[in-house]
Length: 194
Image 1 (cartoon, rainbow, N blue to C red):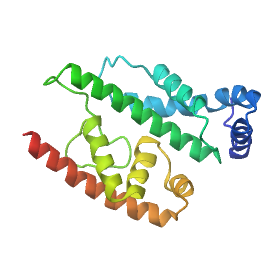
Image 2 (image 1 turned 180 degrees about the vertical axis):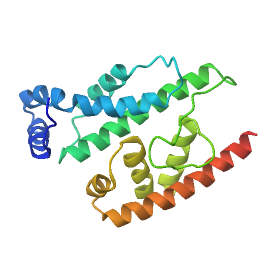
Image 3 (image 1 turned 90 degrees about the vertical axis):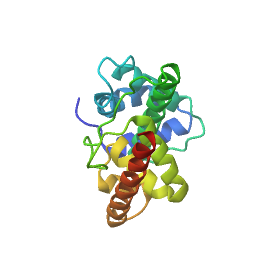
């Protein structure tokens, strides 16, 4: 299937937002490949033998999107940014539940080498990265959003700029500062855990 154009996807998202059920039925096949790509990126960073599979992550994220009547869709970038955010939440919730069941046992690690590098040294686990992003959001919400969209969402600098309604230069500046901030925070967590 050829990739769906932004105007076609935006048209379907707006129709879905108006309550047109047939738009939702047409939407899933068009976005499925991109949702699978996002989910595959997440799952590739999880431990081998992870119980949650790519298809389950896609389905869970899509169900949460469909059941979210408060969202006012504007374009494909917003849709995929929210999809990435939901996938992150699902995996973090799963990791927190697993951690609470297996206190003291090995937790899954997340390699930050998948996207442009956030950390040059170690591979923090998903829960630690989520905690770091939440702390960054309290200090600077936009920088946290930049990391979420670029790292978790796989969006380009231009797509991130479009989603946040800022310039690409601002995204790059925020990205560099956020990486340094997260590197410092994750190093502190590692030192406290040792």
